Image (cartoon, rainbow, N blue to C red; front, side):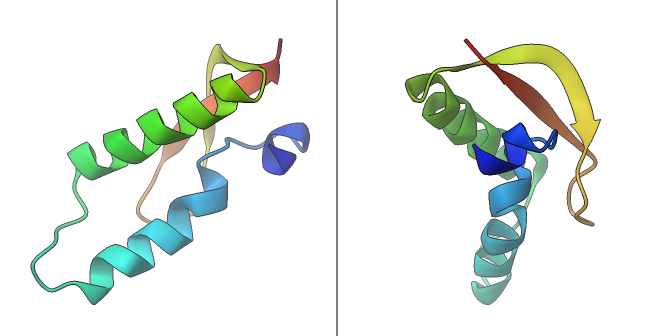
Amino acid sequence: MILTEYGMPAVTSVAEVCFNEARKRKDFEFTGRTKQFIGAMIAALMSANGYTKSGRKKSIIHHAYTRGEFYVKK
């Protein structure tokens, strides 16, 4: 939520942590589906905390991601 207040996509807050955890497991691949799942979890958390999707995508500063949903307060 804090990064959203600073104009960044919410997934930015967990991108590095999720990517690093995936790399630790030799039997796990960080795929597009994995990123979709992470995005869905972020969407659920943001919705539960009073935010909605803006319909705009913004750049994410992480090499495994390109863009992420931007949320606004209801």
